[in-house]
Image 1 (cartoon, one colour):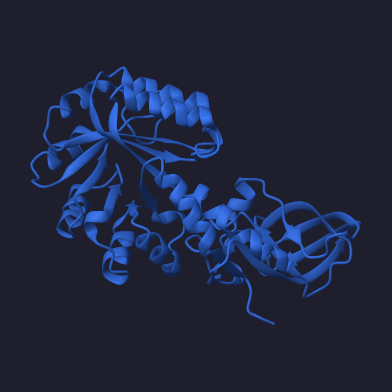
Image 2 (cartoon, rainbow, N blue to C red):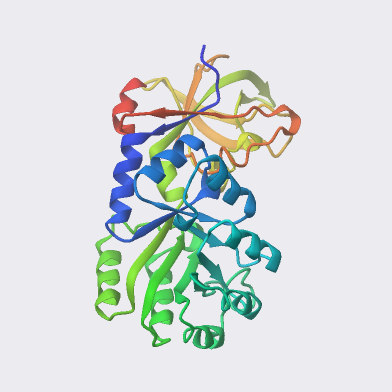
Amino acid sequence: MEYTPRLIIFKKSLENLLKKYKNIGKIYYPIKTNSARELVQIISTNDCGFSVNCPYYLHFLVDECQIAADTILYDNCAATAQELEEVKKKGVKFFVIDSYESYDILKNWKDTSFLIRFASGTKGNEKYGTSSPTLIEHASTHPNFAGISFYIPSSSFSFISFKSMMDSILNLGLKLDYVDIGGGLDGLLDNADYRNLIEEYRKKQLFLELILEPGRNLINPCSKIEATVIQKRTVNDEKWIHLDVGIYSGLIDIYIENKELRIVGNGQKVIPYKVSGSTTDSADFLGTHLLPENQKIGSKVNIQNCGAYVVDMCARYSGAKQIIVKIDERDIMDADMDF
């Protein structure tokens, strides 16, 4: 039996989805979503940039993956002066900032540009981003000012939240080179209202180019995880199965997004199973799922739409297994015929 857990990335699906996003704007893939080397190679060869949030990923991309530093957007509003200097020396020329402290550093740098992060959370409860237009108005006169960046979490991304942020930027009365959108991006590809709204703002000359940072929305539809049932238990008349992948193997996304597991055996009677990872930690619990009744040790599990963060959030805690990565050249819909 092949080693599991395995993350399978479907190259054809990924490239097709990248093309759809590129039809809307310029892509800077947030590397923290999934930094598998194989994935980095596919994204870089499809003329996309990378959004980086710490020196670790910067060194990984530039030194280990040979990614050109001028294709990187450095997006860490909490970066110290020393960190910013280190990033600049590495060759990065594009930054996201949200404070006068960072602006006072970047304004003296030649051959660089910056975006101002505009807060999208409740006023007074923002982790990053300025909720006041004062910094934006002040920085907008600087030749290195390139535009506005904002982030809407997947949990609150909607047409209304998207329009509200774009209207707020429009009300600043600035002509921008870029508007950068990070976060969920839910519905941006398949909802005509989004596309019409983007074209409306483009015609109003709000921006010259849109930047998109698709993370979870790019990776999850193009990947799956193969795992194995390693234990069965009946506790308090409830059936449990344990997999060789779980929260500490990087499956935090299945918990956050309330995803469903799919196990080989279509057409069988399904019953509720409590599903956990391999560790004894109580947090390593993936929820209750309706699965084929006759589960056995060694049964193959196909967890779809859950490739985000599985490489980068893996831990050795309590013996959790490391996920390996495989590239499948096919479309994920064709691969579904295997199951």
